[in-house]
Length: 245
Ligand SMILES: NC(=O)c1ccc[n+]([C@@H]2O[C@H](COP(=O)([O-])OP(=O)(O)OC[C@H]3O[C@@H](n4cnc5c(N)ncnc54)[C@H](OP(=O)(O)O)[C@@H]3O)[C@@H](O)[C@H]2O)c1
Image (cartoon, rainbow, N blue to C red; front, side, top):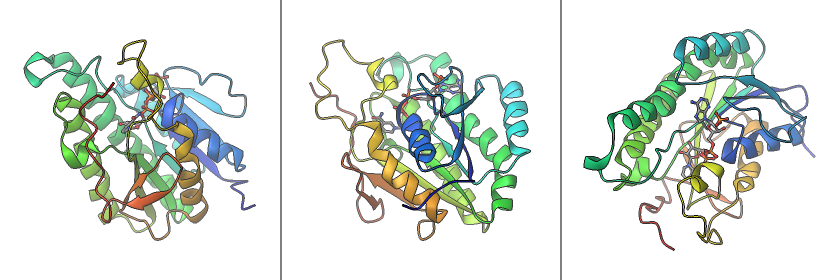
């Protein structure tokens, strides 16, 4: 089996959910993986951990810059602040809006700014962004989240068009994924049987790491629950803004 042994990877927002699944998959393939998050990833002796709170930009900048001093072959940004509940724009708060921008957009900016130099030196390194269908469809009932994810997508699309030495690829779920961040916003009895598992991102993340994103630079890949994927250019992801069940 192809191996990521000897590669050093960083996953910002890798303590839970999709980021954790990507960190686990890269580690299982042999990479040395550091997760950046506020909380230490549970049951993860195979992962390094750096405490970073993206709402504290001075601290986040300093820690990301410290990580960038070493070799970095691939980085993933999966951190997210969803908001505490779905609500129409008029019922949302300015505090939630600012937090969504701080984590989902400025957090991504800080991560790119710190990690692009070592990724260029890896020649080519991979920057993997975890995107969302709301960046394609808008998000009634979650306009702040949708606006922040659209900003993140266009930031990464723009950087992709500038970069030769770093391959920038985005991945997004075809539907909903059962993660702690989603569970915090659902009723206790909610039925998750139609939701994908975070581990569905393992095969695409490993493939992209092994090839440094070759053939997918600047693309957004829509990932199915069974781990298959297709370019969003060929298959626009469906809106998930109406919660069923
Ligand atoms: N789940 C879905 O159905 C779905 C659908 C479409 C797109 N996505 C996208 O998938 C990505 C991951 O979502 P998820 O559902 O897997 O979320 P999740 O389980 O809530 O994980 C979010 C990650 O972000 C980190 N994080 C949150 N606030 C942070 C902060 N202030 N500073 C540093 N790290 C912070 C969390 O770590 P700590 O709490 O330890 O800090 C955690 O590692 C997001 O980009 C999301 O937009 C998910």
